[in-house]
Image (cartoon, rainbow, N blue to C red):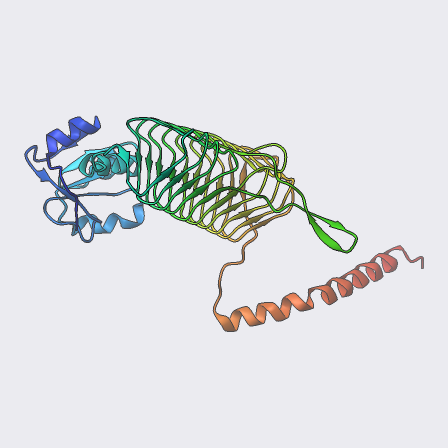
Length: 350
């Protein structure tokens, strides 16, 4: 069970708030959330994955968010949903609203005279706001953040803590930036010049659309010439590297430890699973799924699921597979010789 502060609802009230049909005891009180196996008698839970169906028989939850079909054989209280996981997220938002916003600039913050900060914004302890920066309405800049010169942050955005945003980056509205993120650092631009590397100046910027979320310790490099761009509602997990001049289409989600090399264009509604690597100067079309630990070295022009990661196997079996992989080239040559002999024998005259 997880206690959720500040809010408590009767089942009928919660159903009305969420716009969902419900079944069961109207007066059941919900004040917390929990998984099916751990929920208490005042908790809400959910069933989105059929693999957890058996846990319904033993759950103590006050109400379960589920589909109408799943609810047919469930005797307890239910909130009927066509998309249980999404409505579960909305339920948590109702039970656990964000803390009240407290506008103002902390005494230890350093703010340039030419920065423009909305009166409804809040700037936390030891934050730094550079010259010409623009901070929108109800924006929250957390402790230790550095917002460099001419950066623009749109209304209702949250920059949690110890974040660097530079390179004249522009963030849209309702963007969430988690701790340790770096946005707008120089891209990795190098030219070999007479036996040593010469740094190529990075003069582009970063543009991030509305409703994006950037996970902890992710880096998004500024463009070399043109901008690095994340369209609206792009969701980035922790420890992702997005190189200079990458473009990511709206509603794409990228899981942790993915690396995307420079100037690659990724379409809308893509999903890229963890620890995948994507080469530079590629085009990936809309609605592509890339499975975990994949290496993408060629453009993808057809929607669908792609992958090259090798799932773990018992160690003894994996060693045998490696031996066989090492023999494949020899087997291929032998097979080619056999095919040639068969071809010659078949064409021989009596």
